[in-house]
Length: 264
Picture 1 (cartoon, rainbow, N blue to C red):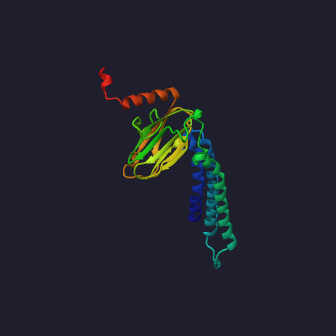
Picture 2 (cartoon, rainbow, N blue to C red):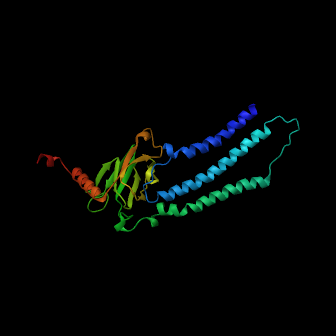
Picture 3 (tube, rainbow, N blue to C red):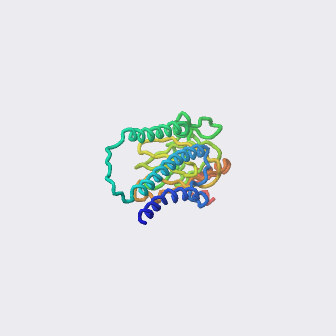
């Protein structure tokens, strides 16, 4: 009886695991909606790895179930000891190595399109470029600060403006920005964009995305950065180009205002 109980408990692990995976989308336990141009490529890689892990998981759990069921019963015969099987050891070393190589080659194109500077958008008519980023996003304990260049298009000059906690960008345009950290390692993570990039102290890291749907999306720090890590949250707001231009003009006017305009 106990043999059957333990075997069924072991078998329930893969059954419940796969079941929870199947029903998770309809219960809202899965990924949020993708709204970025390269999100489908990221999801494709995720599902590729997920299927590989699932098949391995089921095979391993099935083998464990069989071994527990087969060898847990009483057997009066004398046990046979073995010191290993070199052929089997080579197989279970070679197969994972080949799978890892397959993943490495499968992701190279997507990784290059997202991370390599030579693959960044460089057509100004389609949005911002590496040479003309839309903003600098500065991460620090425990906030996000977004610096927009002024009319001169250069950062670090007197006409720069700053917006805390909210990164506003135009929809359906290539958005390139520089990510920096003021203190420790942080991580710029927007789940709906399938975008995650660490911010490293002393480095300026170019990042790009193209949001294809207007809305307000969570900006999360995905790297444990100190006692206040839990509250380091912001928003990325995607708006139309006219709305973006109007918002930036209002931000600039308020930034350089001394309050006298309201008295006139």
